Image 1 (tube, rainbow, N blue to C red):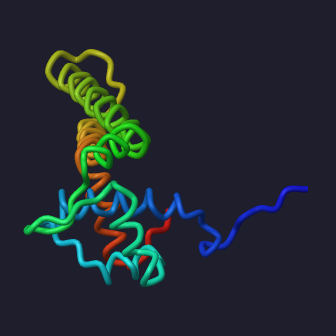
Image 2: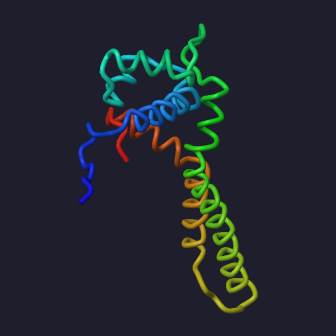
Image 3: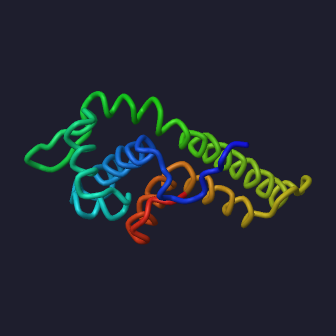
Length: 154
């Protein structure tokens, strides 16, 4: 029988490296580029030597005067392997916005033209708001929760 990994300390080195790539990207995009190594170490559960080894030897990161950034190799890996799982939220968000406008149009027709009503106006606005949140704010919310909990859990 295969063993099941259930403890976070059993994460593979690659899992932590993927989380580090995502966290550096989110810090640069939403956190004003501040990437403190001790904070990254605490959030991801790296050992002291492990975080510096990952930053210096992996080839995904470079240190600049304005902070820690991803190299072209890191950006390619981020765009190709990590961020596509979040693209579903963009599609779902746009779908909800479209459905919200359809429901709002149906409410408008019922109110002013006395045709069939499927959904009231407030449910249409709720669906539009959910769609906008999913499209534009899902990664920001993930970043906020990671910074708040000091853990990179899913």
